[in-house]
Amino acid sequence: MIRERFTDENKLLTEFQSEVWVKCPCCEKKAIAIANCETKTARLFCINCSYLKEISTETESSGGKLNIIMAAHRYFDAELWLQYQYKSDVFLAYNDQHLYYLEHYISAKLREHKTRTHFTLLEKLPKFYHEGKNRKALLKIIKHLKTRF
Image (cartoon, rainbow, N blue to C red; front, side, top):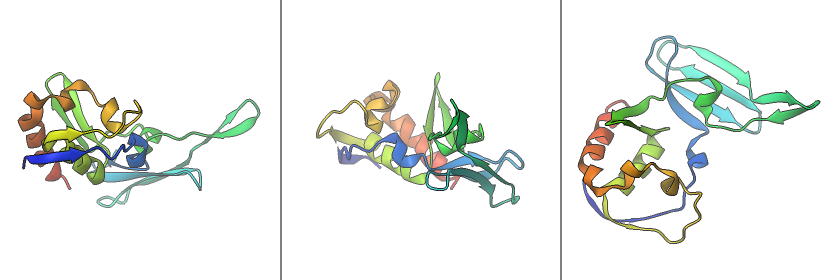
């Protein structure tokens, strides 16, 4: 579905990284990796095979403890569930909310940006996400990825 207008909400990639859909290392079906900054833990669990792994996000450094903050799947070196090869690039999304945000952006004929900070999710995307010539193919990929929900 082609939308007429998209107004950038200046979202950051970090807004989507605490819950990431991944491929289960055991059964290869959809699993969820969750990072919790407050408890300083990361957890990967699969609702299909009951696989569960929980780790601390803290590490020792120069005599003290340091809490490492990154996308939840990276704690487990897990493969993203919502990814698809596109030419020589890879289209990816961390979860359904991330995918919907990308879909709204890609499907819009008019893309409005209020301010540029050089830190927003959209400003950090690879060039192929922005090019109108890729719109139809990327929307087809998004439609395919939605079937994996």
